[in-house]
Image (cartoon, rainbow, N blue to C red; front, side, top):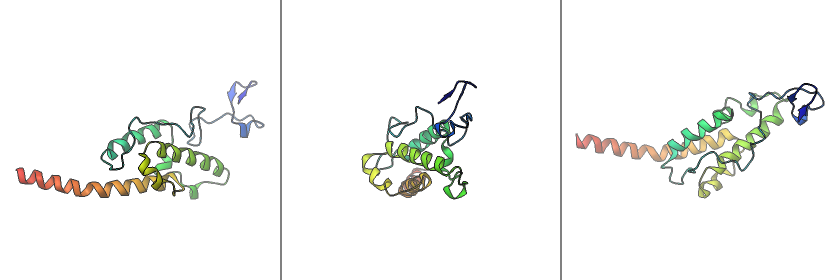
Length: 147
């Protein structure tokens, strides 16, 4: 909402109080932010062979949107005050939808049970890091054999 008297944007929740919107807050959602937003051209594959590149690209996109703190746990639900709870719930739901939008359809079922962005982030990391460790060991053995 636009406050004509001050020339500032104000959120609808605060329209009566005419407080300007804090656009650098991690709780700020731009008008272009929506549940169908897709940041990446290539979704995370079920095999996880693109996990590290996907993760790097997605983290960069989240930091651009100022939402990285939802995946790294900096803003945890248990740490926020009651005044910010509704904002946290809205932003967490938005970021959860963004993660779901950029994983293969086969992975979307395994992401449906989580309640926080941090949970889904940890689940994906555990799944794909464990699958990659044996490959790395095999590559190290192959390199050692070639020497």
